[in-house]
Length: 315
Ligand code: HMG
Ligand code: MG
Image (tube, rainbow, N blue to C red; front, side, top):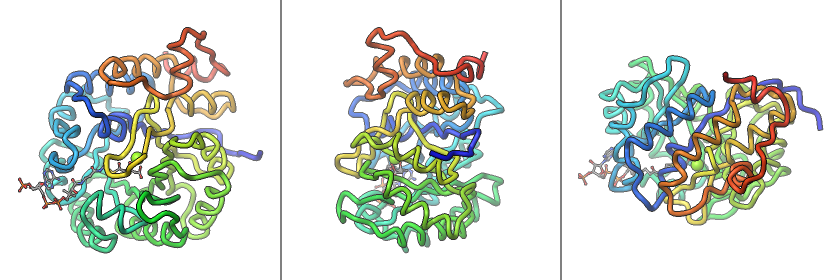
């Protein structure tokens, strides 16, 4: 294994990707406490919610209240998902400084998720990005179903490249390449990302692995080897997409940090404090959190830091 990266940026998506798929209603104040604790753990980018239609995703209906009441840490970015101009208007009204737009590399998923074809989504997002950037916002892009679609099956890497390049052309500073239903494997990561890297620099790519089939950490290693240094993850392994049948949680942030600590790759995240953040949200869910490191801790196994970097990261 040859990895030259010495630090990784983690985009914590638990409060958005994690909570959007939960059946139970999480009290707004609990979301605020959870996000605050994630910041205290050293996470510098925390997706705080989504200005999507509350009819489509009721779990995100309180994003305005959540965003308003997070005690904003000046060192932390709190992006929110925006699907259209209405969402951007809500974001502007809430004082949001950073948004994420989202489309897919397969038509059927995109239609089910945002009721638009891929081309329609770009027509929709063009004025959104222009206005957002005019307001001084940072705009991130997501390309879903990059490793497989729940409706169409295999997805051509060429399509992932095309959609990713279009998102960057539109003005996104980074594209997060999503394994929405967690079907990807390390060799596939090499193939898809290898193709993207022929055109797009690694610094503009992030990986967004769901861990449905237990391959997220192995996929992360494959991406690290290719020079990718930004990874989305959700604390405790929360997550899933309501419009992707079978999608389960994201790569657990604790599992990611545990592995990166052992490789002396700096994340700035304190593992113990991260576990504390997950234990804030855990009692409000109707199922145990799937993250393996967290489970090892809560089953009474001693917390086990693999290097000094974790405990030294945040005092
Ligand atoms: P639509 O039904 O085609 O839109 O939905 P519409 O314009 O006809 O609006 C329907 C109703 O929603 C109207 O209300 C609008 O006002 C309202 P009504 O007149 O019926 O009372 N509305 C809104 N309300 C609040 N905020 C808004 C908004 N827009 C419309 N922004 C739409 C189209 C895009 C709105 C809808 O499909 C939607 O919200 N989809 C979001 C789905 C979603 O959030 N999915 C999960 C996030 S993506 C994901 O998880 C993948 C990712 O993690 C990466 C990966 O894993 O691959 C990012
Ligand atoms: Mg996701």
